[in-house]
Length: 131
Image 1 (tube, one colour):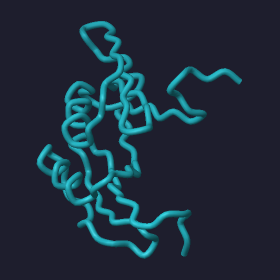
Image 2: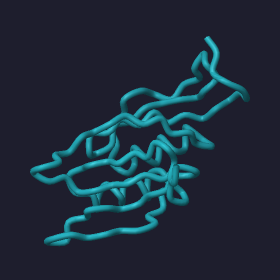
Image 3: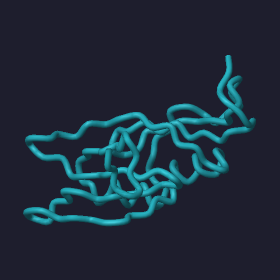
Image 4: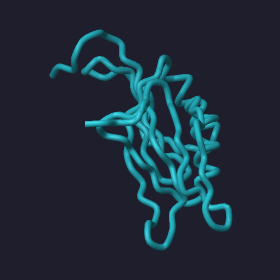
């Protein structure tokens, strides 16, 4: 099986209304990097390749054929408190305060301005998740 460099077997593709502002949010709130952008008719973003840390994914503008489809994402960060504060400052809405969880993460949740849920998680212990 051939997979392009930087891609994984499962590669998220986010479809949002106003992809440009969504990409700006990802950059400001989570330190994302835009690797490549392709425009279609009327300047519509038909594909933007984004990287956050070690993960790459794609973002495109919604259309009549492909309406916005918000999702939920689990994001590992070095500092959950700082990342949550930055996301809230960038327009996200609080879903869950940051706190230490019994499974070894310090975690909080936000909903971004496009309706996606982000579980912002700082791993506190090494090893797999356990009950």
